[in-house]
Amino acid sequence: MVDILNNNPKILVIRMSSLGDIILTAPVFRNLRAKWPGARLDIIVKPQFQGAVSKSAFIDRVIPFTGLARAVRDVNAGGYDVIIDLHATLRSRLLCLAARAPLKLRYRKAALSRRLFVDFRIPSPSLEKHTLDRYLEVLAPLDVPAVHRGPELGDWTPGGGKPALGPGPLKICLVQTAFLGDCVLTLPLLKKLREVFPRAAVTVVTRPETAGIFAASGLAAEIIEDRKKTAASGLAEFRRLAAQLRARGFDAAIIPHRSLRSALLAWRAGIPARVGFSSSAGSFFLTHKVPFSWLLHDVERNLSLLSPLAENLKTAFPGLRAAAGAAAGLPPPGSLCAGVNTGSAWPTKRWPAEKWARLIRRLSAHYGGKVLMVGGPGEKDWNAGIERRAGPEHCLNLTGKTSMPGLMEAIRPLKVFVSNDSGPMHIAAAMGVPAVGIFGPTTRELGFFPYGPGNRVVETPLACRPCALHGSKKCPRGHFLCMRLLTVEEVFNAASLAAKR
Image (tube, rainbow, N blue to C red; front, side, top):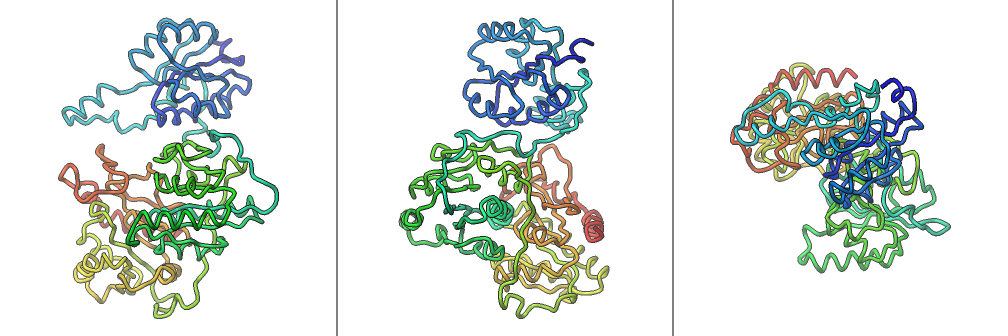
């Protein structure tokens, strides 16, 4: 044991599937490499994951698992000092049993607790521990400190090598046609793209309702609108847009939107270098695929798309300019201190109306004025009901009355902004307004929490969360406890702390 810990050991990690769990091993390898820079670090995975895993900067060799007998021969031929089983199945246990190594470690899978919960709804405290935390616990017998406790930018390099881009000023297309929040969280990617290629002309493809977000950044040379939601023919709109992009002669496309249509659009437009996520529904249309990790914030996930093109991927939100006349009709700066976004496209993402009403009255009393209410045209009835409960004397309800630039200017001067998990929350965070996110069916681990220091998430720790990626029409369990258990006091206290940052 002393010899193993004092020298540069040969270490094998067993994690055969799935890709998401394999990606979670990155902090384990980072910590091992920090402890022993000269160590040999290998991993055994299923063949279909070999290509993605081989791109790690911390793994020396990837062994494909093609059968137990062959794996035993490969492992014993490697002469490993330590074997770490992060798979913990019958097959990995048999492999460890047959392998010759002085030290064998295995993570605690809590398989029985998981099965009892799935089959009989019997809860267990062991289920509250994340898989990654279980992985890192295995390092303790090796005296390896868990300095790196989560996925980081640079864990994985993309497949396909570096794009072959021609000399001279480049033409780059950024395709993001998803929801408002997704577009806001793409702004640092756009900013970094301009930093890496200051002479490049960057065109953004987005929906008409989100074009104002990219225009406010001032970083796009051109914004092309994709009218896929309003066009009379979706196929005709796709053909029109593909022809328009082809005529521009782009050198590369960066595609944070993980849809089949977005990847197909870039391919149909004849863009030679197409960079997107390995989990994209259209990944087979991409020339360069970057591994997707749920444990990174969406800002950092998007920035990782530049890993084929740049080394330092850190950046911040760009400043968002005020459009001419956007503040017309809005209250003068300083007249409002707090704002709320009480709606969402998904009913389960909405904190109950009576709780919102009580929070608005509490914020109004604390700041001595009205509380701004914002939302889209489809949320007028919902917000009107909350306004009635809270009392019109406590609210300034601008629901459905602002353009995108107007919404941004309404939020900009606030001291705090409280929102369900939706787009306006990300707008506030992007403009440096202290933001509080109320999360029910979704969780911060999905990577869409308000980005930046001091911003806060209020949520209830329940084993059934997350129940959906975006939300749903009704609670799958029928109890809606994720939102009902969140108190007005909790949210108000989070808002007070955020405003003091």
